[in-house]
Image 1 (cartoon, helix red, strand yellow):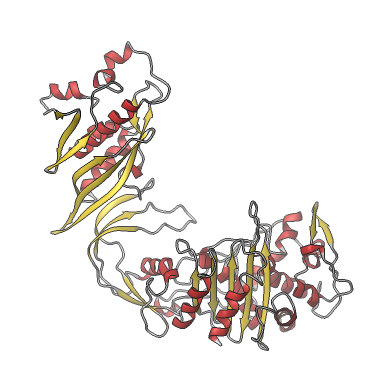
Image 2 (cartoon, one colour):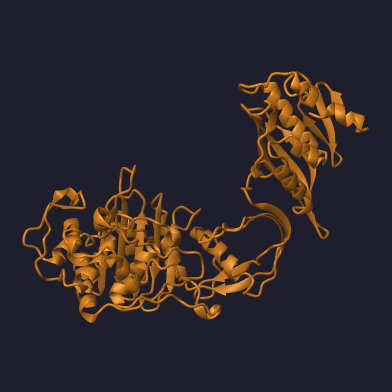
Length: 556
């Protein structure tokens, strides 16, 4: 477009103008683009000589400038003139590298590029082509768009380059590649040997992706041939985003990976979370750490394993163990639960500003009295809760190895009001249902067993361990607190009929700019322990409680 005069001088064939449109052959097919005439970024305007005599154009782009610039870029790209197309962008180097890789690495042969109706400074377009690799071919079709910007130094309109111009799934640092898939597919099995599929268990999409990433090469499968988005390498301390398959030219042979999931409990978990718009739940076996079920009502992100949310009052299980260890609380001894407590400049209160006069610590725990815990903050060091979480409950050390990506919680060292807020699961404390299921399991057994989805014997990985167990006295009192809460406290309605070998804790976590708090619930029944969260669910006993209790009943 912009080099029409110069191109003609080198003997290039100019496209034929038909009825105000350009028709350009692209791989044997016709490409329709907008007219190169009618003002805007005409070729003569882009020569260095003329530019010196013209004022720099500013202000909004005209419709003609947008259409003409987009047409020039698409025409050049479609004709295989990647250098010319790249020159019509605001980042020629990056655009040339990407567009060259479109044919060289992605092995895509273009057939048509068809522009759509302009919308402001953007022009949508559709791509049709063929992906070919070692004699195997598949058609490719998708939609994208270009956005035109004005170059600051001279006002020339150019395509604003970003990887998504070439394909909408591309981000900075990503590449399109066709070839043998980096990871062979896997056939994931439940504990009974049945196949796990997203058709049967919609929540497992992210889990199955994670299993393929980790075990595809170890499980004995062979890779297929795919066009895929290869994601950029992750920064230190971050998980790499999973690659995405766009076209499968040939399927690989899957390897087999056996998980600890129970098919009946997994089906029940799926059923329960489907009742809420944003719910997540996990069920584990306290004596071993085996994960028996995991489900999320939102399937795009595995909140149950990777979520990072304030756990609210369910964190009082960890805090209670700390207070008992330090002699600051005892299940059957009197413990203050006033309406208000001020610490670090913050005034804390209980739900509905209740108070318990001359009550025991067990009564405060069962009713989830915030001030009973905040009142002890002045007797604690800033790092006491962090150490208790790490040393006893195995949390916050970034060393869980469950078989797929997970987050093992965070209990940072804080001071003043934030430290006090951490005691009731607010402040900087962050957890997910897997973490809180593990917390109640540790309270039940006295010893942390890292949860896992795939047996460590499969790949000889080392499971995380805690440096110490609960003392027999602390464990006994902690179980008493949880059992009383399940029988007569805030968890009683949800846990009705599940006793006597049971225990539970409810939680509500306030979130900025969210009308209702997140509802949490964690509980054990026999050798089952579960936890769930309902985002903006309100009281945990009413929202997450029925979900967790239903799983405990199903497994009993």
